[in-house]
Structure formats: C-alpha cells, structure tokens
Length: 341
Ligand code: SAH
Image (cartoon, rainbow, N blue to C red; front, side, top):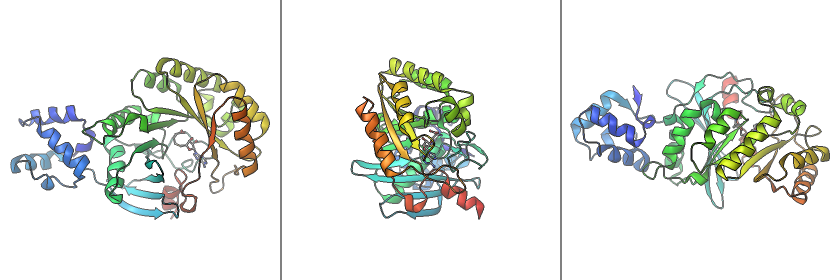
C-alpha cells in the first residue's frame, strides 16, 4: 500500500481527482496528518465516510513505532524507530535555547564507509522515502507535544545519495501547509558528493549546506573518508565555491577533531589556506570515539587552540557542544547496538 506521507499537496490533489474526489480534501488531509498527527483515516472526521473508506483501501499512514527511547540528562532524546518493514532508524532530538532541533536519518545504513562513523560496517539496506523522512519529525513532535524548529540531515545515511527523496522531504518540511519549518532552519550535511552540490545550487532552496570536510589534504581525507578518492578535496572545494557564488549562501564545514590525526597546528594552517576568502563557517566536532574505532578525541586544549587559530586567521569557527554523549547520541550507535544484540 502507498504511504500517504509520500505525497506533496499537489500530488495528493491529483490522487483525489483520480478517485473523483474534490481536490480541496487534500488540504484537510494535510491538516490531519501534519497538525493533528493522526494515525488512522477514521480520525479524519470532517471527511465523508465514503472517502475515508477509499483512502483506507489505497493508502496507509506511515506511523513509526518507538522501539527504544533514550533520554539524556541534557534533554537530548534518541529514538530508535521501527520502519514498517522491520528495519530500524535513529532520530535525535536536541534541545537548545533557541528551540528544538531534530537530526533525521536519510537511509537505512550508509554506503560511504567513513572510518570514524558508527554507521560504518552496517550494510546499506535502502533509501528512506520522503514520507519516512517526514514521519521522523511528525513522530517526535507528537511524542514531546512540542514543535520542532530546526531540522538537520545528520543522522544515518548520506542525504545526497538519496537526493530526490531528501529534496522532496525538504519541500514538505518547508510547506506552510505541511510542517511549516522555514528552509533557513534546515541543514543538509554531505560527505561531499560533488554532482549533487551543483544540483542543489540550482534548486532555489534556502537551506544550509554542510560539508563534512574533516581533513584538507587528499591523503589524510581519503584515510578517513573513502569517498574522497572519487571526489578529492580540490574539486570538492571548487564545487563549494561555485555553490556560494551561485546561491550567495554561507557553507558550513564540519571538521571532526581526532587526536594526533588532524588536530595539530599544521592542519589548522592548511585549513585556513584552503578556506581563505570563502563565505563559510567551520563547525569543529570533538570526535566521538566509536567501539573499536581507531580515532580518539582530541584534548580540550587542542580543540580550543585549533579554534582560536582559525578565528585569529579570519575563519569563523565554533566548537559543537556535545549533546547526549551519555546516551550514545553519535550517528548510528544505537542502531548498531540493537543489531549486535
Ligand atoms: N553522511 C552525511 C551526514 C551524516 S553524519 C555526512 O557525512 O555529512 C553527520 C556529521 O557527523 C558528519 O559531519 C559526520 O562526518 C559526523 N560524524 C560521524 N561520526 C562521527 C563521530 N564518531 N564523531 C564526530 N563526528 C562524526
């Protein structure tokens, strides 16, 4: 059966027309799905019974079951959701002063194989549909009974490896009749699939692009991220420059600091050289050590030195707060543990 959350408003209107129903019903259905967050067509009480029966015959409402929920002392909540086919994904809610931020998954597993990431070693299973991406937000808002104000595509998966569904989900997240979250409050993070950076530049979406850079020379970056062998640093940064020129939007570079690997002053110098003059921001992430991982977290002292060096040399850099470290909130950790059981 088709998941009704996979349709945008126009598509749902078309579906209704095909069923010889009035297209304005689509707006009523959207209200039930995204405002009321109902789980069944029977709850859509302003729809005629005959329409509800037709909907039931053709569609299902994707509604995740919470397999596990871990709550951190700092308010971070990590969910393990049961997809309807028996697979599981993770979604994390982070609470900031400026509002609730949600980190969504885009795939079941990941093909990228980054050496420091907990999703490595878990086979890629499939892409999430746009409806499954949306449902992560709907389900969390329903659970906490609060609105989410920011969405980041930093959960399991490579969003640009599931480009169409991610972009479709963004439009629905953005739609005032959908989840009504401003595009400026949505970030996509990529390991650097260059053709999709060029494609996003053409989309006219005001979201933030984050690039997982982590190292500035090809040898080091390839040793951390195999995707660098296909899309090397110089070409990646050129794509970023072209993106900025085309969109006039600032890019955020993520840089996970690993002890004695990419965290010394030489690395900081190289990073400054590479990013000089770009409209960008660097987000330094203290690396979250994964089980059997070969990368250790940098010392706080080194992290601060690294940040200060960047700031003193004209590159705006901040250190990402570590939220939820007591609940394995780094990508893929909860799902991995669940699979290993
Ligand atoms: N595939 C996308 C999005 C998922 S990961 C990407 O690569 O950008 C979100 C961010 O967390 C990425 O910058 C990723 O490199 C980083 N990350 C993954 N595992 C990490 C770990 N163990 N410690 C610190 N950052 C990590």
